[in-house]
Length: 194
Image (tube, rainbow, N blue to C red):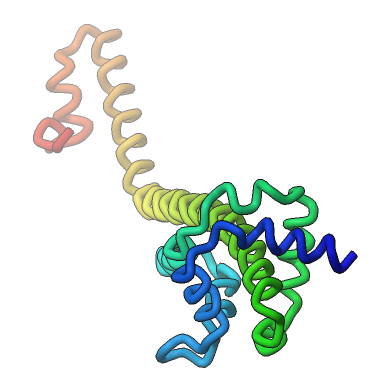
């Protein structure tokens, strides 16, 4: 089992450059101006669907992309094993990851970064969908409020048009001048805006 684990870690780390290894180790260090390690920051939950949350997640995804891990790094390993390593890493404290021997630490972090990048992408899409949905909901409520506020004025106009229509029909049936009938029944009607 130990040999199999070592082989898994070797498969995940065989193409890593020295710079990538340094960047992976830096994930376990505290971020400047933050009480969290870079790894903890990368794995923060999305929170409420706001533009700021989407941008924060995009920043996290870009930080993972800056590691320049190859998309092929995780393909050498069975998907279930990769997911298992990522889950184990997610439940491991940063100080424990620091104590791992180098191959295990880097292999574990590669698996975790591959899984975290996929999770962040899914969460960004979800945040975006929820954000757009909230925009539509707000616009719908705004429209409904405006319609309700304008409802009385609309109803008054409809009643006015109904009375004018009745006066016109009555004038036509009796053979009277329709304009005169409108002026009699509603003075100033011809000067109303459309």
